[in-house]
Length: 188
Image 1 (cartoon, rainbow, N blue to C red):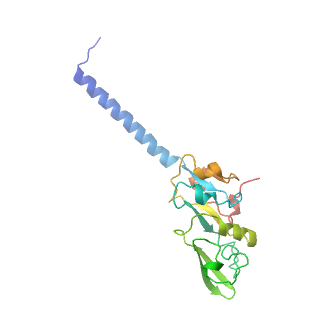
Image 2: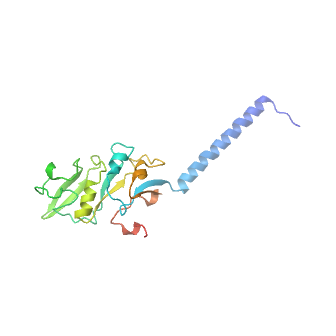
Image 3: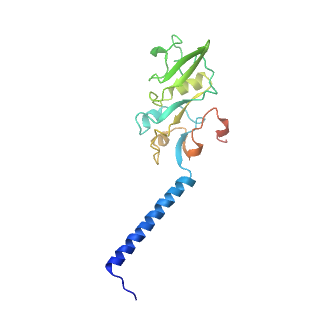
C-alpha cells in the first residue's frame, strides 16, 4: 500500500474542493441559462381586490401595483377607477378621487376622453381603483406584482392570506398576465 505524506494529502484535498466548487458554480450557471426561474403572479381573473396586497406584503410600500391595460380602457370622462362613486365633480380634486394616495394621473385627450396613468411610486396596491374600475367600468385596471420590487420570497406573505388564491408561482417567462391578453387566460 502506497503511503501519502501530509503535504500531498492537503494538496489533493484542496484540488478536490476546487473541482467540486467549480462543478457547483457551473451547474448553477447552466441552470440559470437553461432553466426558468419562478416568480409570484396575480391572476387578474381571480383577484377580488380585498386590499391585503397593500397590508400583507413584506415590502413597504407593497410590491403590488395597479397596472392599466390600455387596450381595454374606454378613456371615459366618468372613470370608475378614478372617481369616487357619487363624486361631486368630474375633476382632479382630492375629494373626488378614489385613490387614497393620488397615484392615478388623469390627462385630457379630447372631449370627452381622458387618459389615466398609474404613478407607480405612489401606488400602495390597495386595489380601490381596480374595484371601482371592475364595478363601474370595463376592468382595464388590475393589480400585479412588480418583479423589480418584489423580494420573490419562497412563501409569499400575500399568497398565504389571499382569500381567492389569485397569487401563484409561474415561470418568469410567463409572468405579467394582463386582463386584455386573453391568450394567457387560465383554462377553466
